Image (cartoon, rainbow, N blue to C red; front, side, top):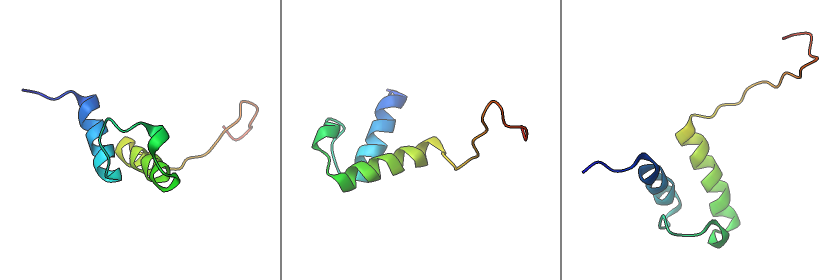
Length: 59
């Protein structure tokens, strides 16, 4: 039986926080919310970039 990608994603985040996938975000501590954001960035492959505004001559 194949698991849904969204469930696998939630399980990875929950495991990193040490909570169930059924734990509401409102019940997370401030430290867990920081870890929550960090884990989502890690899974999504986030990396810092540059911001270019529409009137920026360097773009």
